[in-house]
Image 1 (tube, rainbow, N blue to C red):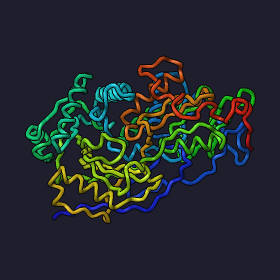
Image 2 (cartoon, helix red, strand yellow; image 1 turned 60 degrees about the horizontal axis):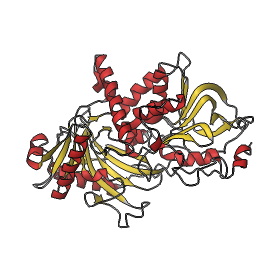
Image 3 (tube, rainbow, N blue to C red; image 1 turned 30 degrees about the horizontal axis):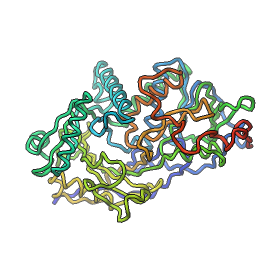
Image 4 (cartoon, rainbow, N blue to C red; image 1 turned 135 degrees about the vertical axis):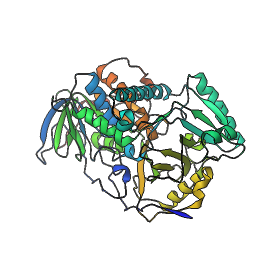
Length: 497
């Protein structure tokens, strides 16, 4: 029996008070520890803190958060407007959920007519356009610059009931204009010989779905953004957590973000794109009397990465049907918790996902659980991911998993929203502050469409995609005067020193 080894992790405990999405740089357990420190975050203030000297700079837009969403917002503003942008983050790019994912740019797990459908369609088109642009430049093209792979996707099931679901889903997607085909077990085996779904199973095949490498994509976006720095239009401040918002004493308008080292004035907009940390950050920004409570929470996930893995060959990206359900363990995924799935704080599940990247690394997932901001590697979950993969790929059953030897494990915290859709919109009564969060596992896939939407919001344009489903207004209970509990209090904020 062959042995595959992974390293166990030090117990990294990040602070919930950060300005970016969590995870050490893909939580590579070599390990560069981008441990986040706790910082007391004072509430909305009417003048800068005098506790420490700070460098002051002026910009049109300030973005808090340097995950794929925050950086993409900056990119779109720089490429499509004359506005200047500053990005601040408590850590570094790809140190969050962005760097801990599998890089799906897929439509197979989307639902036509849902609130996120048009955003997903638009965002995928923007990724296709960017890939085509990179291919047009020659050299390694989109594969080298983005890790772009035209693999297509297989959404698979192992029972006749799941096959019936896949047949119906294929029909719905086809009617929505997506190139989709349902395959019975025999046809599937010819397409993906290493995959086993039994005699009753099958798959939905979407040949136009794509894979992308988050690290390569972020590197390209950073390079694009940084090209505007010499013109004075872009500034990136990493390892510099946001501490507070600064408002005008005259108008009450939010004017700036104070970080640990800088004061960043935003003439046109302040964008908070801080992933799973958004809720804590907003509470700290707005103070204890704020009635705004966006219920985004961290949903922890583990991935196994097998470098240069030659014992299993894949032709496509593969996901089991159970992954599509984002509400916890179901019969077609593997439950990990003995408690009721109604208790989402404890419910955990495993659904098989498998991809090969451009480097030949096999990436296996994935787990979903609510464990706060814990960064501890759970060996039982790693074993469950491995065992679940073995149900679909029999070749893995002849390989023993050794967690205590050094390979790569990715841990990240998806920004989960209970209603299953992102928050993208202005804060009521703070007309120049936008919140962008809640993409859960789709941050990379939806990032370019989200960036276009945010740009349209800032410019006052109608937009290619309807903003309404993602708005804060009337979506969360108790949201009316976000700074304080009454209108009178909202007019006269109490400033803090």
